[in-house]
Length: 120
Image (cartoon, rainbow, N blue to C red; front, side, top):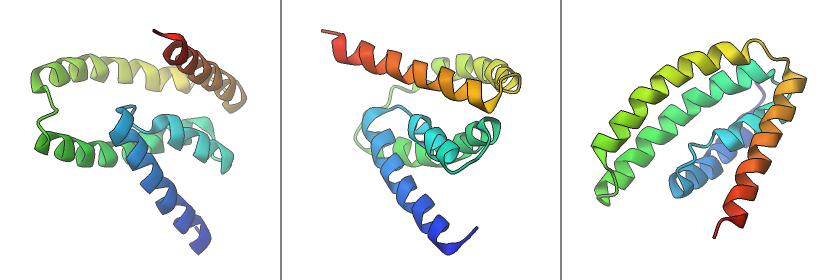
């Protein structure tokens, strides 16, 4: 990894951290496209994104906890379901090529953006 790539990754991490902490979206919607743009295969982009999200999420949890914005019971229940879903999703992404993953990922982002934009 060259120096300029490290600077881009750290700068991107700062932007993702701000976006993730502000929106609660975790940051994967920004990290995965960045890594795909940098030439990483979909499976590596998704897996690496989760490590980054873990670090960002812990930091955001600490900040939001200080502001009393955390419902621990709800978060734990959602997390339990998320653990099960993560095991299924990680196996599904292994079955999809990077080209097809990009298309599916883009459709999901467009659908979510449309929903949020059009919702009253």
